[in-house]
Length: 93
Image 1 (cartoon, helix red, strand yellow):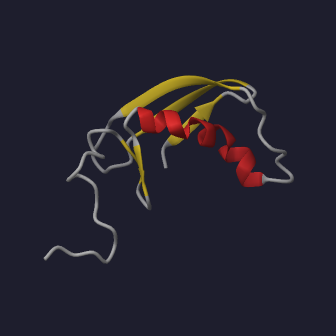
Image 2 (cartoon, one colour):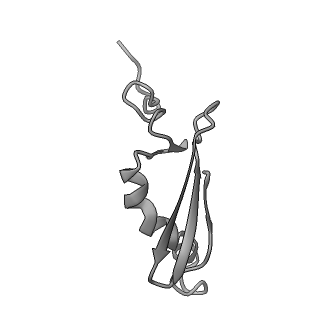
């Protein structure tokens, strides 16, 4: 998955997205102020690392990026109807 961050909450965090669809080179970068500190790393390892991404998820969706299960983040052009992969096990008739 190609969502990366630079910066530590609480405070400004820079988010960088790269489209995970094969062959696409789309990128997006935005800054957000994450006001709440992450949970303690010793009590909630995943919550600590995913804190900023969880807070940024609504904004990522507003930008048109979609999270495709088992694929990662897709840019608005790749996530357009007809471009998304079928769920595994689903065939056309």
